[in-house]
Image (tube, rainbow, N blue to C red; front, side, top):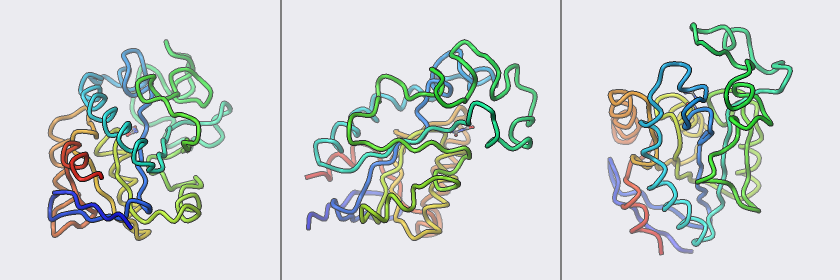
Length: 222
Ligand code: C5J
């Protein structure tokens, strides 16, 4: 058994390579590219695009190490039957979920904007989980998929730190998974949320998990 150890907060993260998956959350055009849903909400997508270069390195290394890679996409069925009114009507965006936007219907499955950015495109053999909520476990088959592969630890990346990454890590934590969050491979539209969100993972002795940089993770891989 290969058991690397990553220098991390609040203490080193040891993991069984054969039982660890890389989780890449919602690196979709609608969140990360100009003209997508994130920008229509008034956000600067440049804040999220910073994660692409280190995440590409981590993805390449995970593939080379034979780690399972799981991508998620937040979005809804074309008839929006899986989008509760509370989510659809929240806020006052210039475009709502389901509206036609520059990249197709906003956050609707099958549309160009809903898909993963070219830089991180999944390859054959990788799993793509479509999720209607912020968490990756809610109304998806993720837990069964992980159980089937014998996965007990997750290396967590993607966007946004305080929303879908946090919700997923909290869900994973309650289900008994050990989570390492890579600080420069998760991104927020708000610098203060990025810093607070990262601090929350590893506070109180690692209440939700561990935090390390992409470099620290890469150095630990065999
Ligand atoms: C948001 C996400 N922020 N993927 N989604 O609405 O974090």
